[in-house]
Length: 287
Image (cartoon, rainbow, N blue to C red; front, side, top):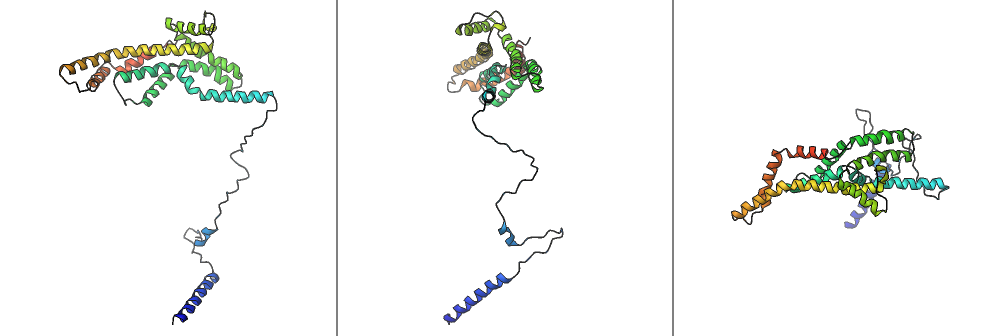
């Protein structure tokens, strides 16, 4: 009996395969929108090839080749391009060290430490405040740079060397104005002496590579002086709170935890942010 069933099953299986191959593809009726739905087997005929671009491309073709320079002008252009990329990579340092950003950021960090604040305000907020105050203070200088350097260069009226000299002048004048005190002039004399140069008589006698480090030392000195003055009232509060806790025998209680609310109350009562901002802006010599 089993020997007869096995050949019958084989015949039925072969007949079903032949019928499936001979049957036509079933096409779904069109939808109401007139869209013809492809059969299920149509997905098997897909391709992974990229479509050919149109004849008139919107994005131009960009080619980058490395070869030996044909003449000295190409060598000079490559060196100039390398110099521009280097300046762009150092742009954040230039903004921090050659503007009012350095003094403002250090003073705001001193305020945060004097108030015994750990996370509030965040460092990003302090850097943002420093950046916008820097733009506010440096606006006349930046306007001079844009009017005398960038705009004529973009219009093709001057070359790169002239634009550099025109942009250097307002920045040098701003840095020199901040060093009118004795300490600032001593910093200039210090760097001039280390380079073996004569004592300067005016701003024109001070090279830029001497003026920049002298300006940085002057800004650090001024910022630390302001920070010391900011710490004095808050140190007094810490000493009073620590003495009160010691007299009450609360040795294990951290004095910072108790003194911080009193510091915040004092800072708010004297309008600390407004007073600090006004004094910071007035500490810069703009004219």
